[in-house]
Amino acid sequence: MFSTIPRALTFARCTAIAFSFGAASATAHAEGAYPARPIRMVVPSGAGTVTDQTARLLADRLTVALKQPVVVDNRPGANGMLANETVARAEPDGYTFFTYSATTTVNPWLMANLPYDPVKDFTPIGRPSAPGGNVLVVTSTVPVKSLQALIGYVKASPTELAYCSWGVGSGGHLAMEVLKARTGIKLRHVPYKTATQCSNDLAAGHVQIGFADSVSALPHLKSGRIRAVAVSGPERLLPLPDVPTMSEQGVKFDYASWLAVFGPRSLPASIVSRLNAEINEIIASPTERARFEAMYLRPGAPSKPEDLGRLVRDDLAAWGEAVKIAGLKAE
Image 1 (tube, helix red, strand yellow):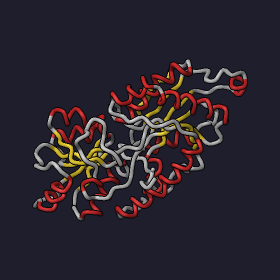
Image 2 (image 1 turned 120 degrees about the vertical axis):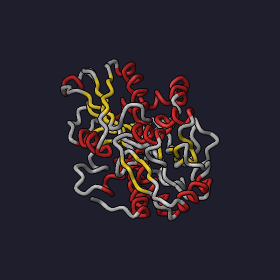
Image 3 (image 1 turned 180 degrees about the vertical axis):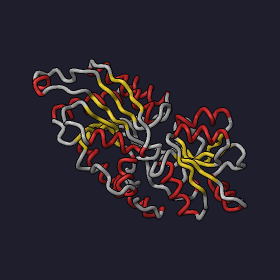
Image 4 (image 1 turned 180 degrees about the horizontal axis):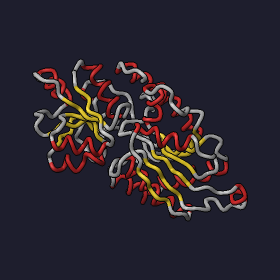
């Protein structure tokens, strides 16, 4: 989105996806008619991001499995908080779900008076993605090809360079603040609403440095308008096998991102079991795993809802540590 590496969501690009399924009656559930209406998947990130692409793949396959349309509704902004709150306030009737990610476990450390509890207000269901990371990129005018070279370049710059992220508290923001704290570099933060906007302005040269998800960054990497120097996660990215992780390049970075489907609290066990089985079947299928990899996404292993509950608690502790290292405070 978290072994010896702390399990953290990530960045990324990190991320949350909300599934909002229209209302259905308890009678319909009892008669086994679930789901009885079309499904709305609310994605708190912009179109073309890794979170969006994961949501669309799941929506496509769940439409077939659940025999109801699943429509993606992109709603970026507020670092995922709006989508999360939508789910936290929803009735536990099996028609409202979202994908829990780093923003959900970072927000409690950065936002005062959060309108939901990241543990108590959600029911874990299934995890479609493996732990991953974002890619640290520079615009083509920055003459570096490695993390250590970038650190030296920033320190030697006579002016303060700018980096972009997809919002305060996002994976890209927190990853860069941790990097700054651990290396002593100074950069000015320019927050955007989406990861795609950040990648586009990096390609245009309006900002010099930033973390980006592989999906929105890849076209610009291929065109040569931006250059990858490191990966923030525990492993190298599928589309960038020659780009080392930050840890490989001498800067400890133990946090990873992931995406997992959750619903509101008190969700009936029968619905949790059904959706968990459907998601696990999707990511276990060789055909569907190939679809993930074709989009440069690393599918996860089948998981149980209780495993996700532990992952969330671990994630909260890990990101709390990261926020402390970065010197950030709740506002």
